Image (cartoon, rainbow, N blue to C red; front, side, top):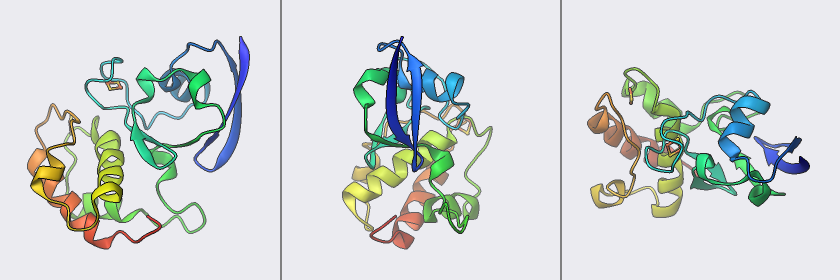
Length: 158
Ligand code: FES
Ligand code: FES
């Protein structure tokens, strides 16, 4: 075991765990942060999608030793911490009533936010094709509508 420190949803956390443990298990089992979902564990389904230094990553496939000092954000940290105001992408998700069973949805929203940060507010269907998050309920068309709407409302700091 060894100590690892990183920033989780704006607050520093330290865990005592083997270097090779994947971040998803640190988040869910040690820290109780269960927004990032376990689907495949091998970087395929994308249910665990979260952000590292503002970009999408899949914590099921990253060792805790490799996130030392980095800034990790999960769906729990997406809303404004001071006001509780939901992120524009979360608002769009509600407006378009996207979720069905809900299991994939935290990862879908985190992937959407990261993609809009990368591509800008006028995101295209070709850009959206790059998002590989699986939805077993098949909510893909509503996901696309919500991302396009949410993108228009995202500011430079979102
Ligand atoms: S659980 Fe991480 S990609 Fe499937
Ligand atoms: S809403 Fe059920 S898996 Fe996507």
